[in-house]
Image (cartoon, rainbow, N blue to C red; front, side):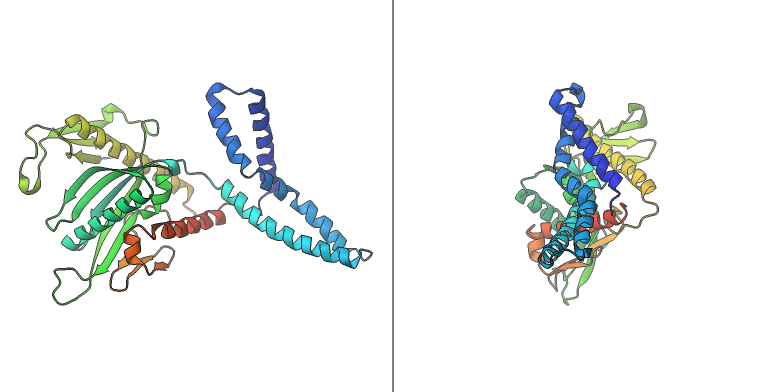
Length: 357
């Protein structure tokens, strides 16, 4: 049960904001922020008022049912109303709990996605390529903008590493549960005896940080420039266009050499570094908040095995929620991706609701 004091505070806040906005008695700098807060409260204010009055209405109906002088037909009507009232209140309570969940400011941000081949040699690099193609297809279907930041190919035509930015609406909230180890089980093209091989790739999804999100002092950076190198060690450019940026306090380092311009490489490198530092700080804060909580979803632990793609059985299994979809081909085409994300999101919300009150 949600404390009635919490609901009363919601109603009072809505009333106060309504008065401030209608009279124009709001600081211009705060107008947009307060308008957004009022709009968000508008979505639940009717439910909040119903929840607040629930106990009183319930007692009135129970009084009728307990009154020996009440007419039988009247009692049947009251019993039906009470049943409907309880059912509606359960639905309202869940909706209000979801509204009261702590908001993740990063959910509305764009994302940086990093995919790296793991154990399994060349087969792992081919799987990393398959994963990247899947996210490309998901982005295309959702009309997101995917921009390649850097790519390192393997000899087999797969990917050792790929980093891309994805821009659109609520990108991070959709992709954040993809972070972790993705495992594939299949028979490689080079396998002559039909044996199933297991290999893996790691995925990291970071909220794309803006300069206002995290301050980086120039004095904390060491920037090295060097000549970009291609496969086999040959020089890609004849100028020192490649950039390595090291954040001295944390030791985090980013190298960027895909662009011919040193300036562009530095800008892309800073975008990645800023996002990694932002995520590092978010993880630290979240760790302090949730030391006493165990969450299977959304930990973002890149060493955690989260999903298996089994080609012989045509299935994809998410180990965090024990969900198996027997539509592997559709999943890799981006067709069944939303079904997985929706289930992960619902489970994550349930975990948060358990810890809310």
